[in-house]
Length: 360
Length: 146
Ligand code: HEM
Ligand code: FES
Image 1 (cartoon, rainbow over the protein chains, first blue to last red):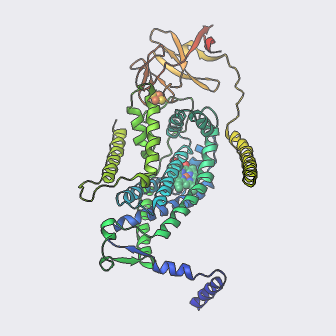
Image 2 (tube, rainbow over the protein chains, first blue to last red):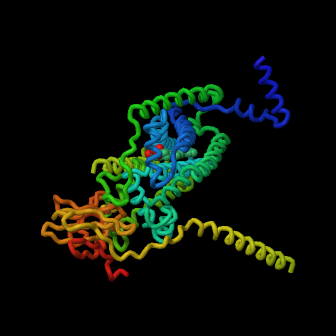
Image 3 (tube, rainbow over the protein chains, first blue to last red):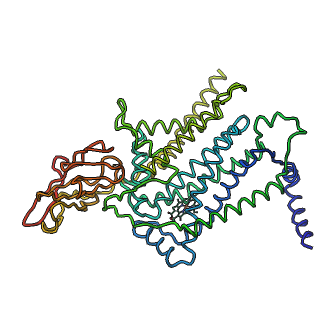
């Protein structure tokens, strides 16, 4: 009876849109199985957390009222009066951080397995854009509660943007909606956070996913060269998808555990006429850049240390985005491959600077 | 001849397209640039009574939309500085223990003349004038800054 109904709907659609290629595609999509298979799940986890962001973000926007006299107050109302308001907010904040964490893991895992090589150059580039957009999500969302920490972190963060030569000052003004961080900044960040970024993100995400479907999963070099008979695969549907779902369930449980036992704090309301409290810091994923800027001397040769630092990060980011186009090829007999070396150095740098940022 | 004509039309169309693009983008970009808000040209504000400020203390005073740090030194003088850190825009405070002006954001330090003496701040804090009139403290905009 039920399957009859499904069949009818299927036939109806098939007649009009010819679903056969899709079904064929799904049937033949397979995932290689080897010791690095675990990394194939990281993008999926990031995607799952993004879906949670959309969902909880929509819920938050039903109570949140942007504005210097309402942002903080509406969130306090949400936390104290709205049933499970604290839970939704806590999940949104935790999931934001986990999402960026997994996006980083995903990026480095594709880096070290060299999945960015031809033909997947643009998969890498779109992925890098997605990570950048995620960080922009985090930066814009951070200000929305209009608490002390967010207020000063945003002042400092936008001031750093303002230090970029030539275009910096005007970008800073456009971001802030004036020369200072005020209510106008909240409106702008809110608009960016809930309309501009989600739209851009979904567009780039769609491209990223289409590219991935088109190419299938990459195989690490030593496996790709094995004879077909010695390779192992599992079908994407349903085997891999079910494993994906189980992992999502686990991540969801961890997320809820964190959100419930470590509820996200609201802090004190921002006061533009109070001294900055000690302990102003950006979110952890900006820490390595922030710490670097802090450690640079005031002047290096003829330019300000800060400006030089920003320029280096901009060039570094660009190079990282374009990795597939300049990746160095080592000789096969080399013990340490050049790209591996670069990746490890970058990881260590990020790690050390982040730790220093919290320790100093 | 044929080719030149084609080149010419292409240039015409291309140029027109560019002009069209500019006329669309220009309003969009300028829309995003926040308009200048008329700032009242405030010349002075009253900060309170002399007795409200014990020696060796500091307080942030609203000077229009700008925060100003008013300090009463140990010896009883009043000084005022822009409270906006010259490093990255945080708001500074007076430290009663070290008798310095301190920025918590990146541990910037200024002495009681506003000079940057430690940490990342690149420039001194802008000084404001302070006048005491009938036991009332008045903070004045530095005249040399118009
Ligand atoms: C995909 C990535 C996203 C990230 C990384 C992200 C991140 C954040 C962060 C860090 C905050 C501040 C959390 C806090 O302190 O409360 C925040 C707040 C907020 N976000 Fe998002 N967000 C994302 C997507 C969305 C979407 C899609 C929406 C809506 C459609 C949304 C709506 C909101 C609202 C209304 C707030 C303010 C409430 C609050 O601060 O708790 N977010 N977001
Ligand atoms: S903003 Fe004051 S020291 Fe950095």
